Amino acid sequence: MKKNIALIYGGNSSEWQISIQSGKFVASHIDRSRYNVYEVLLRGASWSMDGKEIDKTDFSVTVNGERIKFDMAFILIHGTPGENGLLQGYLEMLGIPFNTCSAFVSSLTFDKHSCKRFLDFAGVKMAKDLFIRRGSSYSPAEMARELGLPLFVKPSSGGSSFGVTKVKHEAELEKAIEEAFKECDSVLVEEAVSGREVTNGIYRENGKLVVLPVTEIITEREFFDYDAKYLGQSNEVCPAQIPDSLYEKVRQTTAFIYEYFGCKGLVRMDYMIKGEDVYFLEINTVPGMTPMSLVPGQVRAAGIDMQHFFTTLIEESF
Picture 1 (cartoon, rainbow, N blue to C red):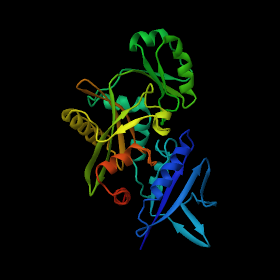
Picture 2: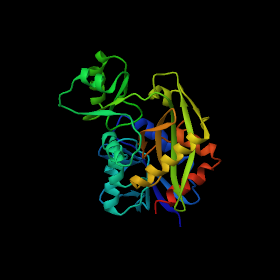
Picture 3: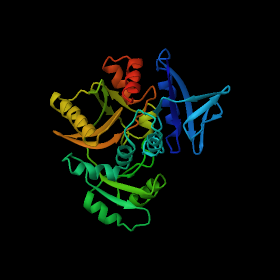
Picture 4: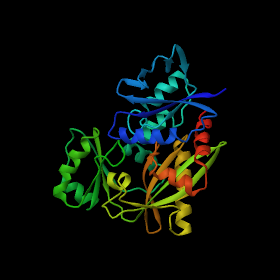
């Protein structure tokens, strides 16, 4: 008997339209001979499938008088509530399997400040940073003095580079912080580590770790921002043309962080390589899955059939 899969996309963050693109891409590659796929658009309190509202009491939907209960949820919401643990907590309470990290791990990794403080104990190299909560006082001069210039200002929670600014002059700091606060209530001001930017996906198949090929991101923009990610203003080289020793160091770091957090499902880690050192940037527990996204490129580079890849992610959730 086919399993009923709820493919959930949309969400309530600035990334909701990108999430829909991810959802449509995944929907087009799921094996329909094994699964019944129901696309669910989540926006605020409205969770709908072809205009029919999802019953949130048991995560079901009624179609032509038939009540359909979902065997599994495939979450493709970037940002809240699909990447920060809220949706995962709901599904955990109902006992419904899903494809991502647990509610706790999702929440911990989604907040950049909390994520970095957790990794401090593991000895992972990271850029120095300062943390600001909305309403707290700060001194742009002290920040520039402590972290140096240029530096990055970014929302502590968020993705797709919304609200992220590269600051080259102290006078730009206050405006950059205000922009970041538009995305969430806490901000990370971070040392700019110059070098080569790379990213690496990881998941499990039959319980064993599968570390995908490393991608190098090359862009003439100031950093890998929204335009570089989604408007073709970057060049992604996969496998990355970096020394073998660094290539393996990236993959080993990815595997270590994945297991250190207790991750599940597909995760993508972003890094900056400076000299012989690999600096962790952030973790994406619901990475983009649009046709131009990084992980699909890594899957293709590894020679993995896309349908098989998504079947694996579904089956590993049970």
